[in-house]
Length: 476
Ligand SMILES: Cc1cc2nc3c(=O)[nH]c(=O)nc-3n(C[C@H](O)[C@H](O)[C@H](O)COP(=O)(O)OP(=O)(O)OC[C@H]3O[C@@H](n4cnc5c(N)ncnc54)[C@H](O)[C@@H]3O)c2cc1C
Image (cartoon, rainbow, N blue to C red):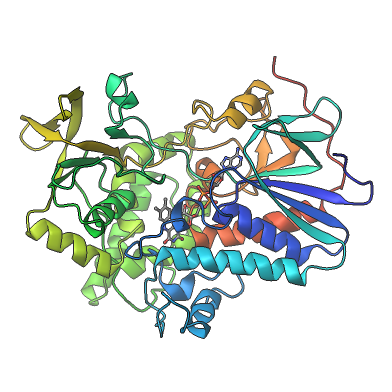
């Protein structure tokens, strides 16, 4: 397939929330002939790992009033749902602070894409391609996207909207259990609970939002066996609480450039707020929009310090549970149906009819062994894009088209999502958004950040020269 001379062709790889929001912005903004090619290997576009769930107990962790797809209209999602109150499964009314089921947000993104397609300017077209892109060939002077099934497509610009990578193995060694049906490495895939006896005990490794999803999923499917949830610190995410917005207390201040100074400043403000009867949550939320500039002000050493000492607490306070979800988990914990442990897993062995899992308690140092029917890995996404066995990433790395940031938190890129090649220069036609930007932005994986990135990236793509920049030579 060859690109017509007059048409700009932009390929977006990944049809989750990030890819769809970029596609929507391109369709809305393009005025000259443009073709947007959206590649998705697994689910319906728009759903991705977060909004592909069919479980109605899996709730958004951002209130409805802040989940709009457009940075200039963040209340749009709430209005859209309200207008459809009679749709099966939709709530009849929606308050701004409501946490709605995640599948509804997937429906919303798909509807927004359909609307953007219908309203696109003449000559602006959209093509959805079901398939996995495994390579970007550049030898012929154009970008040829090669799919796993042998098909090839040509584009002038490419956006990597690949989302998060699956987590690390819970014990970082090659173990036979990892090839067993009793071990689930990617908890977002369909069929995770297949073959699990209803009375069997289950070990969930991790205690973050995905682990919480799994606890709810198990119970809603009628699972009766005890659930063990093991994480390094045994900390569950904090819970949302409605509160009035707090003023941006860093406005006009010289931003801290060390983690120690930053944490001290935040603690002091939380203390000031508490003295006035104000909760810590709005204080943290007040600096969310500043996170990229705070992050940019930290050296890589300071960022490493953050990862070592602060990250688990930061994540637990930033990514909070919807109150309804927290109540359900607490009820299960109180009833002894789920136990949360702090410790480190050191043995996972398949035995007759189950898996023996041994861990060392963080508090007592004692070993404890549980026998379970299944082990589900919910350790949170890994970020080292250069090591993960993703065919596309392996090929891009071999071609020298990508590298990773010094802490391997994401792809090497500018804060605007321009991908940097292995040698540190801008590729010119390759872009990214969402999770791969963690190294440069830190706060970049939730809808409030992604929708803003999508808009500016679309502006950038449409303003660039139509033909791709000269190709980078291969690394080898
Ligand atoms: C369980 C969960 C709940 C969340 N809840 C919220 C929430 O309530 N609010 C919020 O703001 N954020 C939430 N998030 C954050 C979430 O990461 C973002 O909102 C958003 O869904 C990320 O979308 P994405 O498109 O970047 O990634 P993904 O959803 O991971 O989508 C990436 C897509 O790319 C596809 N893909 C990858 N490689 C290829 C390839 N080579 N070829 C073709 N396709 C490819 C994948 O199949 C996948 O569908 C949640 C995240 C998770 C995991």
